[in-house]
Amino acid sequence: MSVSDTMNAPATAARDAEARAGEAGRDERSVTSAVVTIARPAQELYEFWRDFPNLARVMENIDSIETPDRNRSIWTVKAPGGRTVQWESVVTADEPGRLIAWQSVEGAEIRNSGRIEFHDVPGRGTVVRAVIAYDPPGGMLAQLAAKLFQREPALQARRDLRRFKQFMETGEISTSARTRAEATDLPTAA
Amino acid sequence: MRALTWHGKHDVRMETVDDPEIINPRDAIIKVTSTAICGSDLHLYDGFIPTMKSGDILGHEFMGEVVETGSGSTLKKGQRVVVPFVIACGSCYFCTKHQYSCCDNSNPADNQDISEFGYGNRMSGLFGYSHMTGGYAGGQAEYVRVPYSDVGPIVVPDGVDDDKVLFLSDILPTGWMAAENADIEPGDTVAVWGCGPVGLFAIQSAMLMGANRIIAIDHFPHRLELAAKFGAETINFNDVKVYDALMEMTGGIGPDAVIDSVGLEAHGLFVDNVVDQIKVSTFLGTDRIHALRQVILACRKGGRVSVPAVYGGFVDKFPMGAFMEKGLTMKTGQTHVQHYTPALLNAIIEDKIDTTFLISHRLPLENAPDGYKLFHDHQNETTKIVLKPGMEKIQVEMPA
View 1: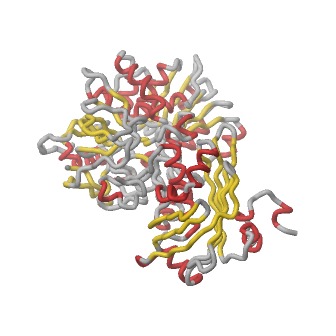
View 2: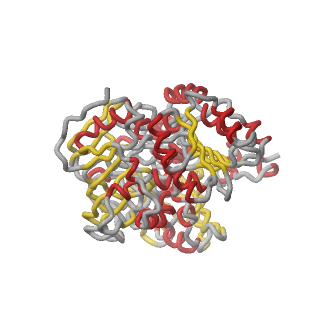
C-alpha cells in the first residue's frame, strides 16, 4: 500500500523516501518542498515567477538568471567556498495562474527539477507550494557542507519562499540591518 | 551615534556605533527624544533570553522626531511619533485582521526559522529583543531605523508632552489589551496579579471598561499604593494567603475575571534548540508559574483568564484539571499595539487616561547602565525609568 492511499499529507511530508522521489517523477537523491500562503492573487504571483530574472529579487544566493528564450533559463548560483554552480533549465509544464515546472538540461552541474504550484484560496490569497528535486554536487558530503553554510536546499527553499511572500505582500524584503553596508545579502538592497 | 548595547549578564554599556540608514522604501529614521526601560528588558539584563548577540542595541519603548524617510514612508520630516514595539507590515493576513503581533513578514526570513522551530509558527519582528524576534536594533539610542514606518508609528500632535504618550509604545496598550482579554462585564470583580506598569495600566483600563471591583495583588507596598489610587482593593501576598483572601472578598465565588501580569521576571523566550537555555527554562518553568496556578485556582467557574505576562518556554504542573473542569477561557499574546494606539492617544489627549504617574526616574541616556541597575535592584522605588538622549551624564545615587 502506498502512502497516498492512507492519508492526505503530501508525499514530501512523508517518511517514505520512495514516495518522495515519486512526487518528483524522477529518481532524485533528494526531494524537498516548501509551502507558504500569500495574500495576493494567484495570477499575479504566477506572472512574477514566470519572468525568471525577477527571482533574483527574492532568492538570496543567485548570481544571475539569464533567459535566452521564454522557456530556457541559465542559473548561476553561489555555492559554499566562494565558488558558483551553473545549469540550464527548461520549462516542462506551464499552466498560467496555476503551475510552472522545470528541469535541468543534460550536463547540468546540479541535476535538478522542480515545480511551483499556485492554489487560489478564497479569503486567504494563494497557497504557493514548491517541490524541488536535486542531485547535490559531490554527493552527500557536499550536502552536509552546504548545510553548514546554511545553503542546504530545503532551508534555502523555505527562506526563498518567505522572501517571495514578503516582496509580493509588502513590496520589500524585511531586514534588521542598521546600515546599507550591513544589508549586503538583501536581494533588493539599494 | 550613542547607544546602549548588551554584552552579557548584567553587562550593558553606552557605546558609539554607526548611525542607522534608510534601507527599504518604507523605512524612516527616528531621532529618539524619550525611551524607557521595560520590565522585560530586565530578562535580557539577567541573561535569560537566548539568541542575543554581544553588541545588540536594546530598547523597545521609544518615541522621537522623524528625520529621514524612504520613498514609501507616509511620515514627514519633523513629525513627532511614538513607535510600537511590534514591527508589522500591515498587509499580511494577520495585519489585515489587526493581529499585528502575529505579522507574517516583519521578522527577516532567515530569523523566522528559530520561532518556527520553537513555537511551530514564525513570530513577528520586535525592536531590541533578541534575534528570534528579528535582531532589530532598539530604541535606547540616539537614532533608530524604523521599518514599515507607514504602519507602526503614530503621529503625536504638538503640545502633548513625551511623558504623556511614550507608553503608547508598549505598556499602555498591553495593559489595555489585558483588560480587553478579560471580557469584562458590568458588575464584574476583576483580580490583577502583579502591579508593575502593565498591571497598573490593566487596572486603569478595567475601571474604564466598567469593572465593579478590582482587587490588586503584589508584595511591593509602593506599587499597591499606586493600585489603590486607581480605586483597587489590595492584597499583599506577604501578609495573607491570596486564595483565602479572594474567596472571602468575593463571597466564596472567586473573581469573574483574572489577569496574570507577573510572569515577566520568571520566564523568557526560550527555544528548544538552545540546549543550555532549555535546561534553565524547564527548571524555571517548574519553579515559577506560581502566580498563574493561583490565578486559575482563584478564578470563578466559567470565568476568564487574561495573560499579558510574557511566557516563553514550557511550564510544569499547569492546573489543566481546574482549567477544564471550571470551564475557564484564556486569552493571551504579545500586544497588537497598532490596533490600540489611535483610540488610546485620543483618551490621553482627552485626559481620560494618565500615564505620567508611573515615571519614577528621568535620566540621561548616557546613564542607561545605571538605570538598568536601579530598576533591577530597587523595584519598590523604581516603577519606570525614562531615558533622554543628548543630555550630559550625571552621577546617579543608588537607594540604600
